[in-house]
Length: 269
Ligand code: ADP
Image (cartoon, rainbow, N blue to C red; front, side, top):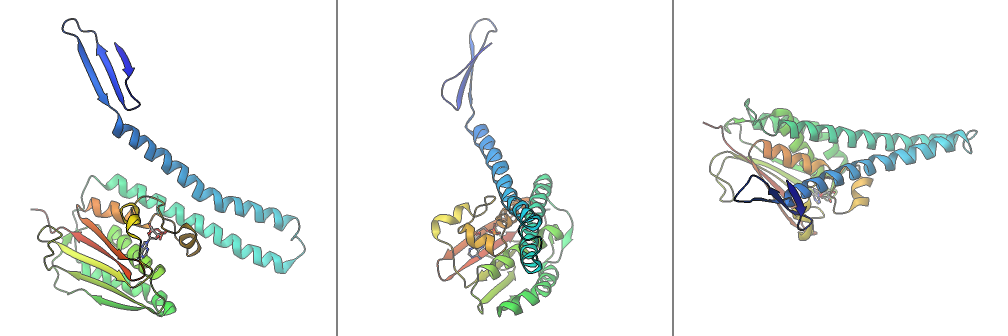
């Protein structure tokens, strides 16, 4: 058997099984793209963890040396170290969530869930943060919405991430709208439930929208990191929505705000 690459992504294999001559042409474009995605993911994850780790190591050296006899400086450095450690913890937590969701992605959830309940609990948990930022939350989810097959923990993660982002990238003192409905929307198949999270914040330039759900993709890296982002929130959202066989639509206008709309299908027959 003789194999020879024709181009980087195309390989020809000649199989000597007598006459006629068999030739296998394999297109390795997809395989290569997956390999690259995997390699990028490992490189990005390492980078995201290495940066706070390097900073921790630096501060430990400072605490042992120049700051050893300076209690005020020690307190200051310990504060920064705590922030860096918390950042590593958030990245590791999100990476673990993502890998768990990916493992479950081929088996859609079976449990029936009542979404208004779930959303109410999330909203209650966010009350202190909303108050601290002076943000108004308009919440509407009719109690009689039909139940759907869903994973409650994963959907809690989805709407927590979207509301978290609406707060992080929203206008201080602005408004967030969280609306759940079973009214038809021509963008989605009939049936099911639609939940939208809208903010009136900084918005997202059009060219970034298609890439937002990639792991570690951020419009403004510095801003995301300084407000505690991991760059994994929307990747988690996309994978959970995929597992539920749902759809995610992102609409945004820079300077005006952003709307994330999640459609989740009704129970499968
Ligand atoms: P992060 O942890 O950085 O917020 P996400 O995956 O949740 O990561 O979001 C990816 C990027 O998408 C963010 O860094 C930000 O640039 C952009 N983004 C997400 N939600 C919003 C929003 N509501 N308004 C403006 N930009 C947003």
